[in-house]
Image (cartoon, rainbow, N blue to C red; front, side, top):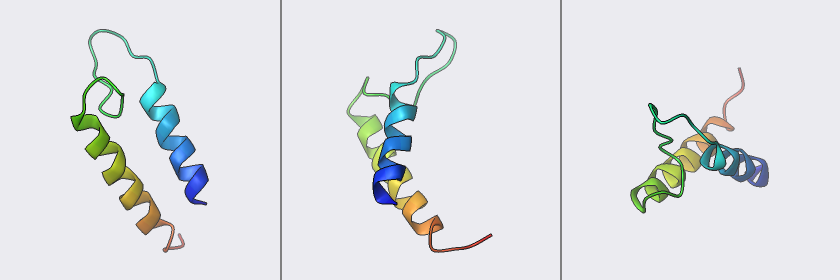
Length: 51
């Protein structure tokens, strides 16, 4: 499951966007690494709950 989450976040990070938006998960800045890690922590936590 963790591999799927990491793959999902990687896809988000690699997403190309138009000039008028910002991909907060991209590899453009070091700060975005923190955002990617925080998203992984959140998504891992959410896997503990069922809808």
